Amino acid sequence: MSKKVIIPANLKSTLEKGPKIYQPGISVDCTIFGFHENVLKVLLLNSAHSNKWALPGGFIYKDEPIENAAYRVLQERTGVENIFLQQFNAFGDPHRSDPIIHQNRYQEYGIKIPKNNWLLQRFITIGFYALIDFTEVKLEAANANEGAQWVDINKLTNLMMDHEAIILKALESLRTQLAYLPIGRNLLPKKFTMPELQKLYETILDQKLDRRNFQRKMISFGILNKLSETRKGGAHKAPFLYTFNDKKYQKALKDGLYGSW
Image: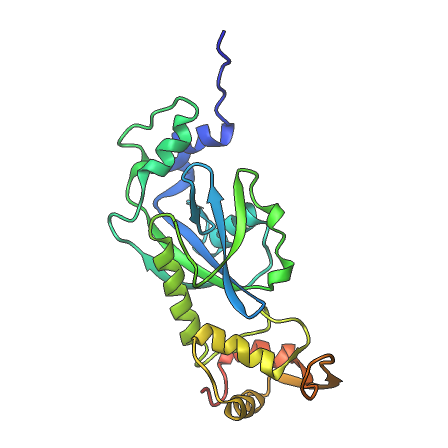
């Protein structure tokens, strides 16, 4: 006797009641950047149903603000919470959605999705990005059916649908942000050196920066606290450590950097 296949309640509900619960045709996708060993990385999930890497994303409840949906989806799929997300673009190519992903998922339970089902229709996605401390993300918190992994921004491969384009657009938006908003507080250790901060900027911008000009400009923003401590153990003169001034950093996020670049 063959074993009866039981479809999970959440999948059954999504298929049948989705249009009543979620806003059809729209989703959110989150590009999460982390910085580790002088490499800018992005957090990706590997879905067993598509065998491709994907951004953490999902549907939006009908009575839910889009920003709230992004926070919820990110927490549900990666365990990451209490971070600053920034909306940066919408992606609406008519052919960006891939119905095969949903078809394969339900086919495991012997279910064929009707062609007119909402899951197989066109989806526009709203992109959000965030900068987080690489060390604070517990990859094992990801959904049991998905493997989470940090991937080098320069080594993206085998991504779902248009997710590589979304990541590159997020990176472009991040580079634009550098011109008028501070970064680093969520990407560096609490205490860091000026060369470490400069390396972060150079990695994101993908270009070398003049050391003296960079230091002078960063200090002029007034968002750094110079400590009496130095970084020990290097071959050269030990550089001083800095921390971000939280109050001034938050003000700069709101009002922009005085003087900019």
